[in-house]
Length: 101
Image (cartoon, rainbow, N blue to C red; front, side, top):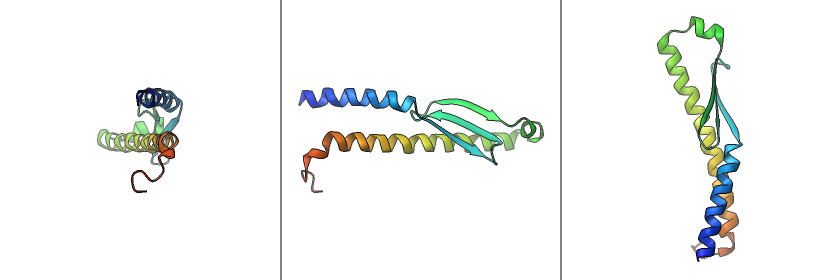
């Protein structure tokens, strides 16, 4: 039992390192704002088109920034869930029909 727990901890640490290396992004208005994050949901960069920055008002900029951040975080969540499902399947796939599947 402790072996499985230790293995799970190791795999979780490995997965976190892998997710740190996966880059995702969220973009709005054809790239006027692009937010880049890693798959661990850490924002790494925000790029705002200079021409858009000059013409946009504060409210529009804030609204689009929120949308871009949420898109990037949604992408990160999708990658994270996919990785977690794969790890879980690899670890517990040999349990057969133990849980009624």
